[in-house]
Length: 469
Image 1 (tube, helix red, strand yellow):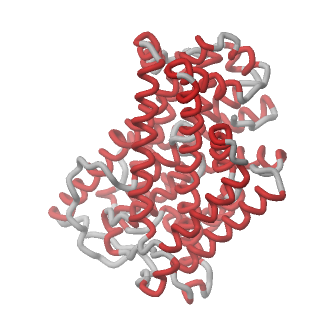
Image 2 (cartoon, helix red, strand yellow):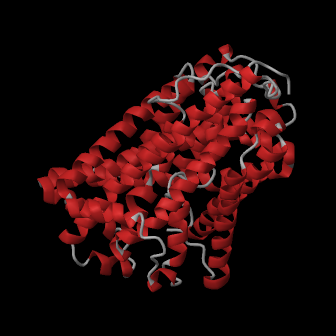
Image 3 (spheres, helix red, strand yellow):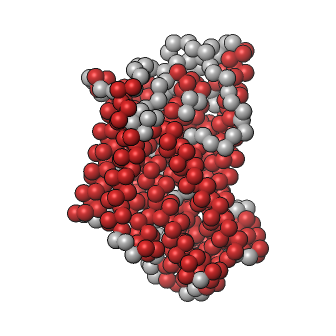
């Protein structure tokens, strides 16, 4: 890689940045549904597993950022440098997992509860509007970062206010105390019914599947570290203005004390992102939803029995009732509004991230792909996934055939184990020694690989299932 100067790091304390994409992708059905459901069944003490899951994700985020900020390349390019078939595994996995409009279907179903508008109609309209928005944007990243920041702000503030109204200080104390009930694991949680769900819920504490890998692309787009030397992707309408993207990343002089001082500044910047913005916002939202779950249990004492009998919608209905208990039907409907907002956040983030990741791998590693501008390849994947989503919504099951979904759930968690292994290889083989991870960071990422892959295969071998929720 050619040597270029590392830009000066911005102040470490900031409000906006590429973390907003991970928050938008991470604060989804895991935080608003899967973990509240576990609390309703097993009590708030089960939340110590969430603490481990989201903390592991924060460390993964830091290590994903290491290679991206040091080189201006995505982790996919790093994987290709180690072993190109490893990169193609993620290319195929992304197509298998993320072309299904499941998040959007869940969000628009909640919107139907709120407005009565058929969810399929809303979903199709949203898909088309997302495509138009991204196509008309001058620089896609800038528009999406600002939009997601507003939506996440509404979600965080709104759920916190409602939780403070319907919950009690006892609910909050039990919720926070449950985060430190290390070792608590009821016998029922180890059953064939619940163990795969518990494992999946830990994996989905924050962003799941390939979402952390896409974060490296958003870092580059934001100009973090050496990403400042790589042009941003433009919308289709402005594709003619797309600058030529270099064939490879860049490296700074790690023997220069001034460059290393700037590197430490960037690491402080991304550490603030990881632990105060990502970890903090994700934790705040899930605390709010857990308080709501406890309130829901008081309003619907039989909700635990309903969930254990297989009624997956019981948790959401009970939490809507908890909202209503604070302010009547209007607040009850507001809960479904929050679920719809989560679906919209995830759709905006996923569609952009999927298209960005596939375009990145195609542009750099498919022969003759560089005849096209990155903007054109991005738009091709974007409108391709939108078209497929509309066809599935209109003519097939909204989230794909049930048989395929079991495979996709497996692939999503398998990808998380695989990206932990990839991180260890890329950061410790491709980076100069002065900026490689510390031993403790490698140990945590190694633990993540063993956990995700070990628990997933244990679930398959012992229970014969990979139903993650």
